[in-house]
Image (cartoon, rainbow, N blue to C red; front, side, top):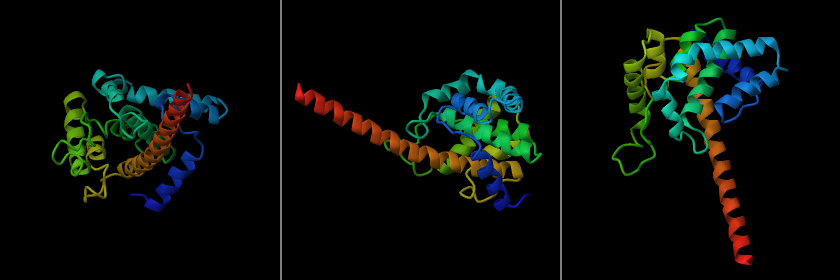
Amino acid sequence: MKNIVDLNKEIVDTLNNIDLDDNSDDLLNNYIKSNNNSKEATELVEEFNEIIADIANNPNVLALKNHAQHYSTTRYAHCKEVSFLTYLICKKLKLDYISAARGAMLHDFYFYNWRNKNVEGQKRFHAFRHPRISLANASELFKLNDMEKDIILKHMWPLTVIPPKYTEGVIVTLVDKYSATKGFFGGLRYLRKTKLLSEKNQAINERK
């Protein structure tokens, strides 16, 4: 397994070459644009879309678009972002980018609102329970190999205690944490923007 420091460097190098956006489709388009619409970048995006096509277009997976992940980001967009970044990094490192991308696309395949405080233990135990729920949901719909299962089950490491078995799984874990952090701060900006807009509208109404 590769050194985590080296993996982090590869992730940072990859992220620096992409104009990231919360919308998963824009992310792919931005990647092509940031590479001057090159044939290579276009072919990479096309290959990625082919790899996850049966997953990304499955009605049950598409339903993740109806679930918020980090305020302004849907769970579907988050999974696709993690999947695409994982694909790029694993392909560059000559790893199993196919299994890595597919496993990453299903790593948060659950449908409950983990922020719901009205459900006992929902938020407190979410980090520990949702990988198993995601794996169970994915296993019902797709034929998963050992790497894909391991990626889904252990993507919350080190909270899962047992680390990922494969380098590809470590990459998914690191990319997922980056995406979650970005989504959190993006959510704060979204809430602040919403609040400022609300205050502006209220001021306008008071002047009428």
